Image 1 (cartoon, rainbow, N blue to C red):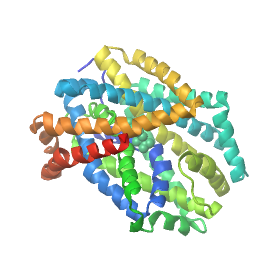
Image 2 (cartoon, protein in one colour):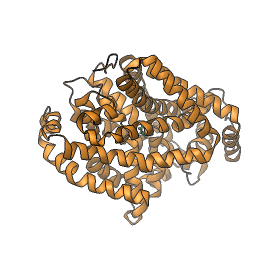
Image 3 (cartoon, rainbow, N blue to C red):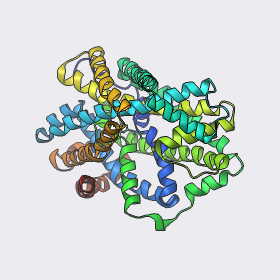
Length: 431
Ligand code: PFF
């Protein structure tokens, strides 16, 4: 093991860190909207189906690679399947690119958190709120300042190391994040007219399950579990040796799905009750509609909500940042301090371009979520399913009785279903 690699102090820390990576902006701004758009409960069922039958096996494949090699994505692939090590470089590059543009959005959440404390949205109409968002993203100095602030926070947590920094932050902040979200859900559901929002989210409409709905459910379950770029691999390389990977994966997927649903219950009833509007997607939902909605709910609701968005974004960005840092430590023999500084400076350069040039931002988002993540996931399942001896994954599963019982199912999915399904998605995305 490389000197100074570090490890999580406990199983709880490992699960919270993995859940922290999984739970992020994807849960808060993409999931609720997609559910409403694509058939409510029908979409949720589809999403859970993909999580269980495709994403979880990929999670385990990545986790096994990391846990058994105790290395970064490149080192792990080089040790286990040298022919596939190019995918390690791809994962590290993808993690770096996502860190850069994700931190731009992270910066917006920092900006909104600060504004919510200073009651900057008070009494605003929807048009005024949209104008504020556009002026923030158009004012270069502000968007750059909050981006640098967010990236700096990410770097500081990673600098503090795996145990104290990443593990310590996740152990404290993740439970707090759940409590914050629960508070908003309770407040949101108690509003008059909240039922309409619930209806939008939950009414099952199987006629809406078409090609785009299936592609969205699958893409979202990959993005949400942070698969394909080596985050899961890197975090699992820090897990205590005797830790049960099967249980860790199940808990992570469960927390991620519960949180996505909670976010939906927090957001949609409030949007319908206060504005009576069709909810927008992505940035416009979180940064234009919600400030107006939550400010009308009054009290500390907006502050709590934007703090939750900020924490969710931070625990995800540290996981991507750490992938690159782990590579520099393991493969280039760098000390953590130097590695963090280097990644910070490089991400500063690419992120600044993303912050100021929306086209570059979209290109980075498209390339990573549609191409790199899918290809990375494909390589991870091929390596575990076809290259390494079956005894390696079996050993990881058999450390728990339920894992041992479910191993044949996992093995079948991993060896046959996942490669075919993921290759089909990769081809569709490339066309
Ligand atoms: N899972 C995170 C979210 O849902 O927001 C995003 C993410 C984190 C994607 C880490 C990819 C990644 F490597």
